[in-house]
Length: 318
Image (cartoon, rainbow, N blue to C red; front, top):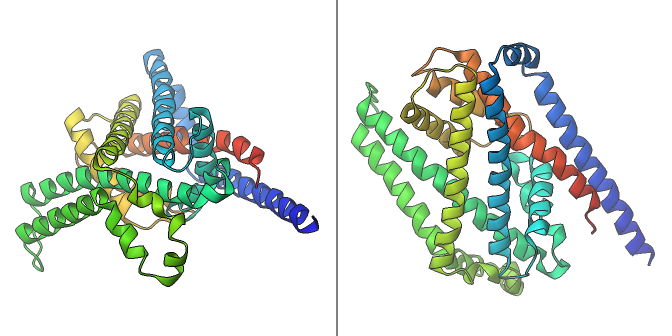
């Protein structure tokens, strides 16, 4: 009985620490982002552009709703949950992930809505969902990268454009193969003694059929389309003159770089900002507008949902 009470106390303390760190992280990022200069630029926007922020928030809700539908679909192989429960889990996971390396906290922040015996399965479901999202980012980003390699004046004496393009395409083929043959990962993990003894905890990986993985892939693609359009709307709001096709190209490269570079607590926003400025500046010299767009995208898609998720995380039970 005492051990049970101690576990509950430690879990409450853990939640308080997690929420405090997440909120401090968001505050720190905003404080160190020249926010006052951006607020001044925000005041100069026309009424029409203010209306576009309503659309951005609607897209934010659509984004996390789709992710909730995706996770609910993936975890249904282990446990049936309501869409509202899934949404709360996704936002709570975001709160934990906001300050962890490569957002690994997301895997653990979601699982407390599940039964104790199903929580490892919940982590497996989250991994599959994240894999599909990264795969979309990598495929589209690779197309943009191969394009810039072959149709721009970029010369690399170490490796030719053709060989580099082939390597990028080969990596994509391998990633796609393993995504749709996720059972191979299950079979690989079973070779380890510890996993073999507890293989029932990861058997979710062998339950996903090809059609189901295609469906998850579509969910991830729809989220990616939302990201692209949110970014483009913000570029328009902050007077970054760029065509839609140019925006897709440069934003795809931005997300690609952000996905392949390991990011830690204080670097994720910095990496994305640097990448977006680098690639979008190929088409526009409004650097301050690009910076403002990147920051507001982070506020809308990460900071605000994380704050909402902190309330759900506080209510989670061990």
